[in-house]
Image (cartoon, rainbow, N blue to C red; front, side, top):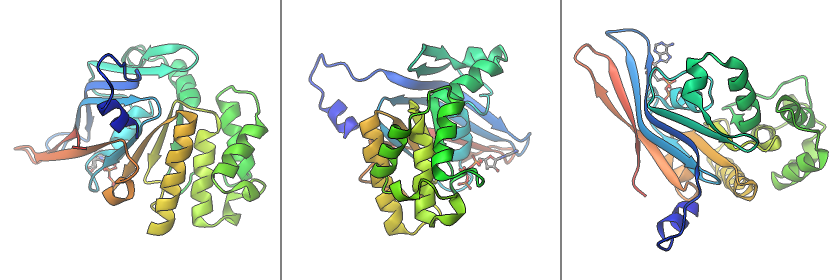
Length: 259
Ligand SMILES: Nc1ncnc2c1ncn2[C@@H]1O[C@H](COP(=O)(O)OP(=O)(O)OP(=O)(O)O)[C@@H](O)[C@H]1O
């Protein structure tokens, strides 16, 4: 795995450059005294890594993903960088500070893919149509060969003409992964992508997801409450350390977990 390769890199070998780096970030939710405060001292992702974010309900996993997806603005951050294939590095803090919604939404569409717990596919489009829409929203030319190849790798090439309601739960999640990868984003954020399927199917889906992302050199950041699901898959893991403030609020600190 990539992390293992990095750990054993010979002196002088340069690890892949970060494509996403968030430093000394804070996100506040709610208001005192029952405020929720998520602290992220350092979250760095490199090309092709599969990173698991693990934690109990309410610890801030979705809050973290929304920050990384450029959907939600950090309350504070000393650094926030996203490297885009087309235009190089972007200072995301500056884009939020300047209210540059246009640049943020372009980056979101081009550089980020999202897999939701229950698929999040548009119900009125076919599986193929959902994937094609990702390319269109990212401003990329239609590439049916790419979509077919990804679908074959995910074992759903026979489902491309079906609508989401005509699929099984596992097929729907595979279709959501197809949609998230279709436009060749640098990063795919997956929020409990296998929550709706049984454990055996979940393991197979995560393994296929990891294999394809590695081929594509796409970074995957996957949220799960089940560490065993990503034990053999993840290059690195992040968790959350929770503390209660005197006023009854919560401080959750996102920390790297040991290998
Ligand atoms: N709009 C809001 N106002 C105030 N607090 C909020 C708001 N939304 C979420 N929170 C609080 O923020 C904390 C983190 O929520 P978040 O959804 O990120 O947790 P999570 O780890 O993804 O949980 P789950 O696994 O249950 O989805 C929770 O304790 C929640 O109560």
